[in-house]
Image 1 (spheres, helix red, strand yellow):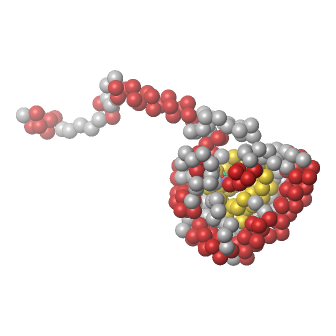
Image 2 (cartoon, helix red, strand yellow):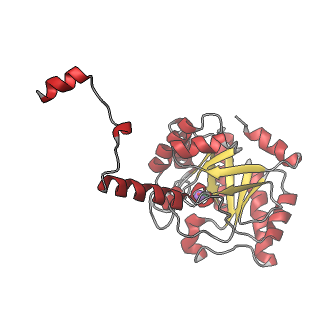
Length: 275
Ligand code: KIV
Ligand code: NA
């Protein structure tokens, strides 16, 4: 398993870091098999797996439950878990207790928090307590109500400077990496050049140190449409729908099961059975 120090080295060596979300045993197993560098148990869980309209209904217990499954599927991959909505905004004390549960019960290797500013003190406290933290800036979906929608962030030079400043705050607080979501590629490039910790982009262009995408988007599974920044590499919806329709129709039409899928017994037992 790669440890957080190796991600720093990858940045120095200009070796791209690949992160992918996963939420359960089978997705984690396939992510590990594909050799991703890190798995993110994102609170996108709420939208792509649990069917909520946003990430804000996701609870700490949800994140722990799914992180456990992911660790069982990918025991040799660095697993980062999102601290969900409002679980790191109350006291430092509460934040540390919650983080301890996510690490000890969920077995996450690192935690991800959205925002800088008020959150920087939480990043610092967690880091001091021995918890590797990844920051998340730009479009931060837990604040969608404040941001006014799922929109590109840092589009003006002023906003971009503020983002850079926030990224530096996260680095200073001890974050091991920063996720940049939905920012112009020029902004991501400047931030990447000005940080010594890796930047991991989603909708942030290619001049970042790594990329992250949502599993269900990559394989088009359960999602109907994907954002501009997503590239899909397969269509699991079509594959699975086709299989399920065929199963239904074969049962209805008495084509399944055949003898091939059935058990049998010895001739004399059959004779005795039918009398
Ligand atoms: O929850 C998530 O999947 C994320 C990524 C989009 C970075 O936070
Ligand atoms: Na998230």
